[in-house]
Length: 296
Image (cartoon, rainbow, N blue to C red; front, side, top):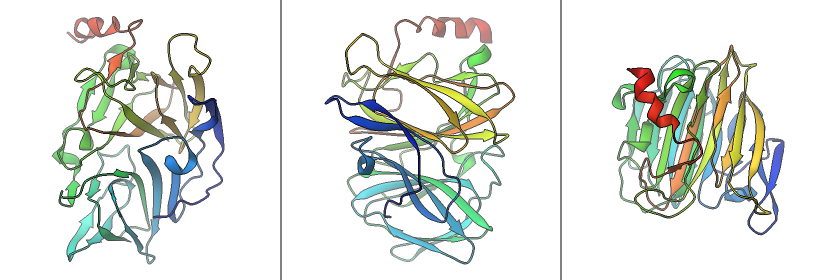
């Protein structure tokens, strides 16, 4: 898959060396082919690449994972998948939109040549990629394979669709979804994963990709670090349908506007794959103690 210029508009921050990098990527909507959203190709991240793939019925889409593993999340539509070695999956995916049901996730190892044929008018997918060791088989996770989980309490309640974060179908990629009711907070209390301090915290790059219902909705994404260093991250972004934010470091809480439901797809990539290896902001971690009381 070759990166494509989709005319994205980006906001910027300074990295460790003081260079300006893109952090917020404005959405360009569904397009045929592959659109690279964030990754080493545009200087945001070092390990993780995240993009969107559009397939139109009658126009199959082919690619090769090369030295990377890939996870495709079917946002909407259904497809036939053919993979190197004669593997054929006749009907993959079936949801009409990401609010209707959980995702179907397609996990491909390095060295896989693949072809997607749309069985619906359009096939819309998010994809994450990262270099990885070969050896794992092709795997497809249906919505019923990984049960949903409830997290938080009160107005920071959300529903997790854990995906590959809990399924042993990838070496390094954790790709999943979170559903957030109108007006609620998520990724709360704020957490980060930018320090190697196992088993409590590990370094993971991440991308959030936002889809709203109705599509005119919006949310507020903050990405911040404590302290007063010159290169400290302390950014606030208005995120809309189809937007993405790359998170190389820092805490990253998110809130949804009243009246709009949000599904955000998140992709994590680190040297290891240990779900939960992050640390909460000490200033707000007390709220975890209130959750059992509220939920009782």
